[in-house]
Image (cartoon, rainbow, N blue to C red; front, side):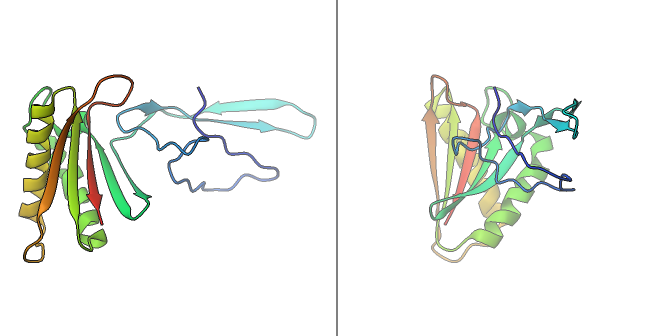
Length: 164
């Protein structure tokens, strides 16, 4: 299925800026693999298509109402089926901490999602610990955590860090 289409006439731009939302305003899924292609039609109506490389989204930053949301792929952050953070995830979490530092005004929440609520809560708590260890927060600021068990078509292995 097509997630997002960009179209125009004339010479294509060198860069395309995109907010990560699809045609129905849905945000791109972390952990999913996307492919892209470019189609050009010349003056005679001849089409040519160039396929791009696969892109796997590990994390994304976007604004939803008054919250900034850092959404991370749980498979990149955690050991499979465990609450422990992967050693290789620290670069991704350091980048998330830098964003929290820049965007923080008064509230930070961590929400973790998996198929098990207890596991999700432990994961949220572990992310909150990393944030509190790496960021000097104003006195009295508490990082709120929540873990959710998700079933169905929703991506179950993700972490949202909400900054307000």
